[in-house]
Length: 244
Ligand SMILES: NC(=O)c1ccc[n+]([C@@H]2O[C@H](COP(=O)([O-])OP(=O)(O)OC[C@H]3O[C@@H](n4cnc5c(N)ncnc54)[C@H](OP(=O)(O)O)[C@@H]3O)[C@@H](O)[C@H]2O)c1
Image (cartoon, rainbow, N blue to C red; front, side):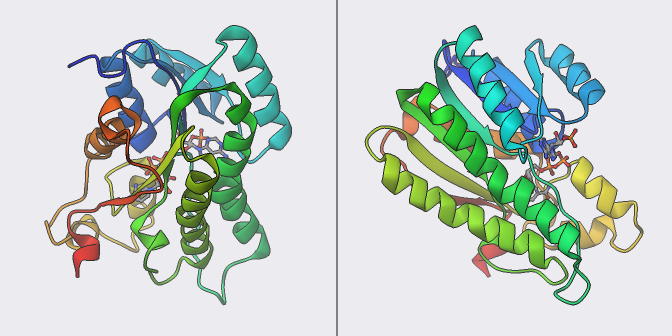
């Protein structure tokens, strides 16, 4: 690897598995000092020891906990160079079947989480640093049976643009919209038996799901030194899904 993130300090939410773990792994290889965050402490500790990095248990939807992590961070590390708002979850449901509880959970974690993290960590970010939000292709076009998830990801797309305007010239803010990526989130949906691996593969014209490292490669580009004129960009990494 080429040390593109040498000397950079990065926080990656939802870094214990899936896409977040893939981004963490790549950023470590590129020389960044990283801190991964998620709720389940034992999974988080195992991931941190595999990566040889720091971890901090955190629920991104809890403003009190997020603020206290920011205080801890500034004492321990000083300044932050990269914030990746990746933590997210899905609770499928139509407009008819979605409960208020499932609505609140997905909006709180997927949309309020990136707001709370960015709001709390901004005062500790270096000029020239960057924020990356992980939305979804369903933030750009809907899918059936996931109203709250689609709404939350659409929100993340436009939150990215609004933040990029407010922070232009100081901090870059970009967004990746992946299609289906083979992660524990997808394994959980496969375990219901309502959808098959082949169904998920065929959603992409390329004919297979993405891999976390394929999202990580774009994350590296957007958070690294080779995209200094890129902000407010919403990039699909989707095996061609949104081409049609
Ligand atoms: N996989 C896909 O097909 C796909 C496609 C498009 C977009 N995405 C998006 O990509 C991101 C990562 O997805 P993934 O597939 O890697 O999911 P995953 O395998 O389920 O991993 C999700 C990560 O987020 C953490 N997390 C969940 N809720 C959290 C909370 N309230 N506070 C802090 N951490 C939390 C999880 O750990 P804990 O549960 O221990 O907290 C875990 O580390 C999500 O935003 C997802 O919506 C995924």
